[in-house]
Structure formats: C-alpha cells, structure tokens
Image 1 (cartoon, helix red, strand yellow):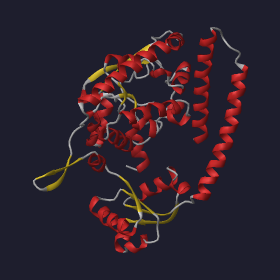
Image 2 (cartoon, helix red, strand yellow):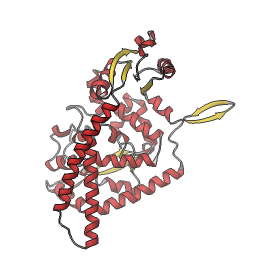
Image 3 (cartoon, one colour):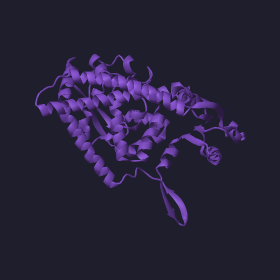
Image 4 (cartoon, one colour):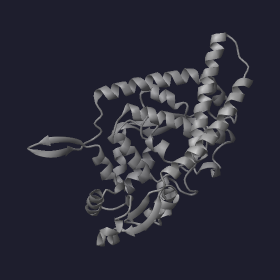
Length: 381
C-alpha cells in the first residue's frame, strides 16, 4: 500500500508539472521524458518502500500482544482478516472472564487489544494496563464512539462530559459548505469532457444516461441522487431494493463494469453537492427502504443522519464496500463526533488512492438484499 501511494503521488505530481510546462511553452511537449521519469520514480519508490519496511520492523520489532475478547468470532476476525498478527506478536488470546480471573496474565505484554468487552469489565482491565504501563487498544461499541466526542467541562463543582448531537460550529459548517461549492464547481469544469464521454458510452445501450434514486441525508431529509446508470433499466423490476454483489451481478452492463471500477458512475453527484443535497465528505447516503432494514437490526444506525451525507466519507475510505454495517456505522459516528476540516482534506486525498483499488468496489454476498444480510450470514444469525 505504501508503494501504491508513492506511485499515485509521483504520477499526480508529474502530471501537474507536465500541464504547467505545456502552458508555459504554449505547446504540447514530448511525453517520452515524462514517461521515463515516471518509470524511474516507480522503481525508486518500490526500492525505498521495501528498504523502509525492512528497516522499520528490524528497528521496531512487533510488540508482544494479548487479545482479550467477549465473542470469539470477533477476536478471530481481528487477528486473521484484519491482519493484526502481521503487525503484532500475538502471544495470548483469552476471554474476558479468563482475563478478569487473573489480570497478571497481561503482565509482560507491551500491548493489549480489547474487543467487544462491556464497559465495567473493560475499565478493570484498563486500570490494570495503565498501572503497568501497557498500551491498550479498544474496539469500541457505538456508545463509546459517541462518548469520544464529549466536551469536558466543570459544573456544580464536578467534572462533567457534555454529550449531545452533532455539535459542529456555525463557522465550521460555513467553511465546509464553501469548500463543497468550490470543489464541486471546479471538478465539474475540469471533468466536463470525461462527463460527456461517459454519458455517451452509458447511453449506447439505448437506455437513459442518468439514474435517479431517492436517498437520505441530514435529519432524514429525502433527495434524488444522480448517478450514471451502470445497470440494466429493469434491474429492480421485482421491486426489491438490493445492493450490488459486485462483478458477479448480472444486472450490471458492460459499460457499467468499467465506470464502476473507476467510480465514474459517481460523477453526477457533483451536481447534488453544488445544489446542497450532499457534501463532498460525509456518511454514505442510503436508500430509505435499506436504511429502515438497517435500523430494525441496529437502531443506532439512525444516528448517521446527524450530518449531511457525502460523496465520500470516513467509512468509504477506511472500510471496504462489503465491510459490515455495524463497523461502517462506528466509522461514520467517529467522523461525526470529531468534525474537522483537516480530516475532510485527508479523506479527500485518501479517496483518490482508493479509486484504483479493486477491493474498494466489491459487493455484498450473492443473494443478500443488503449488507446486513451478508453480516447475518457471516455471524450465523
């Protein structure tokens, strides 16, 4: 991933430099020197990343780690699927009851990961780890994420934490909206040729170029999201709202596979941003019927509606398309709890990188109408 980021950075920098040189010389310059420079940079980036990786893990060997879990499935997923064992030396895995029975098991560990443990039990482990100088990482529950955005204050001679709804300042919201307008307008102008080419390609099968769909944004307000059509016109002729299953989905057209892989189907949403329905960064806008299904399983899912929906977001960048709804919910609530323009800029830059990562466009399991259906299959519910 480090090499991938270096390659994208080099290509973007060289591309901008080439445009500047062409503008200054008032003519198209020879591309061969630029291509040679990019190839050289790619080789150097690969060598540098490999050497840096080896040096880092030689200088800072994996820390001795214990994993304390409440549900074994969650622990196994953390270690195996999320790659914890690749970066940490996992020496002990134990249930919370085993840990509380003998906290000295954690002594000698440098790091402890706590997954799915209730607050009372977790606090006991936390006090022990802090007392012993052990780093502790907590996989939070929804309530923990909300509490992380609390405002510390003093009232009635007591320390207090103020917890409430999305508490972004008016100044923050004003600047965020100004950024949305500038970015969407600039992107529409710069990408207008690509916009036109994509529209013509989509319309080649005889159907409409655009696809409108009702989605939810801040406070449950409904709006019509605009996308390039990537599926057959009769994709939902049975009336059932369902998420895509990725490349296996036979509803996706030939052009649709291409524009989905490059995320070009999302381009018309720039018009939604300019109009004010969406923000550049925010929680993913869900369909009302799918959001209702999520809320039946997870009432906390409605908390995502505290902020305006976005073209890209925390969960889209740091999760996968088929990451479980509960994990995505926590990511979005983490973003909502800590509003920051710097974080918005980081997410925008990270979005450029994931545009070309195949796993970011994966779908849900075949036969599942929503990602919740896939989560139930994975957990055996």
